[in-house]
Length: 331
Image (tube, rainbow, N blue to C red; front, side):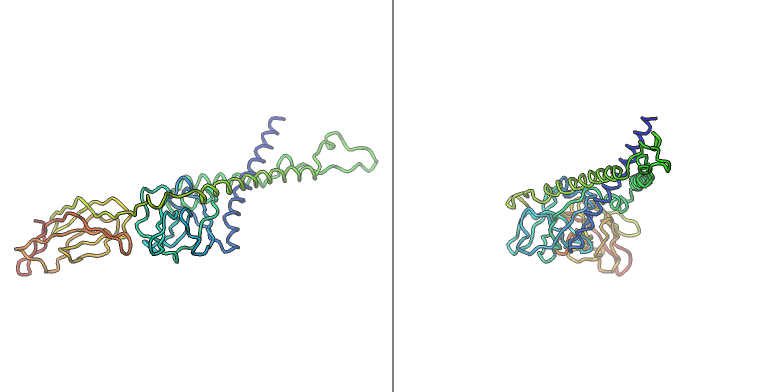
């Protein structure tokens, strides 16, 4: 019976500590918004190991002159305006543009940041509290369901009346006789409050250590010297091929920076623009501009940013029509 009581007390205390820790981390992530700071959930591991996917980074606005190499900045991504970029400043360009780089990336970001696009500088990392959001965005149902179920169980156990929640110290009997031996061993209310307060204090201290220690390592470490940072080079598609399927269909392969889109070119003329980034084939349009007696060179161009692109080094020959009849075909 005594061992069972110890297990129950330990279980309730553990559940309350876990709930307190999670709520404390959530508090650290949300409270800075009252100061105008911005919490952001990290969705990728490009800043690993200093900042991992699922961490929440709190950024605060700083003056332009405080955007120095080595600092982690949150900015509107110039390559994709619907996304935010959280990378470290690796150098400053001649015109004041910020060259940024993810700690885990082999090269600097292809497009520098305009200082006006910076929303803030990272000052606080709250570890792992944003993992459920990452799992939701990436469709990882199993770990999300497990974590939700475990937290719900801990919350239910934490809110139950624990074995340490016995009645208060009993009052003397009306006849003046002392209380029974069993009743006299009940824990006083003040002692119970001290025990609970100590448990919550330990959980809060754990949360504070978990938040503050990684933050120092994440935002104060020095970056790679700017002289050693090379700007990312956009590569064009490769392994171009062509097959006839009621017309000429051009295929290609691509590995490199995540593209914004592809373009299909005939000669120097763009015939199809803004091909989705996951496509690896496109049909040459039949616009009547080809000739049966002339071969056109068809190439594919990668578009990464607004001003960053690269064309395939190779091309495929495509023939045309005769007197307006027929379709483009592979030669």
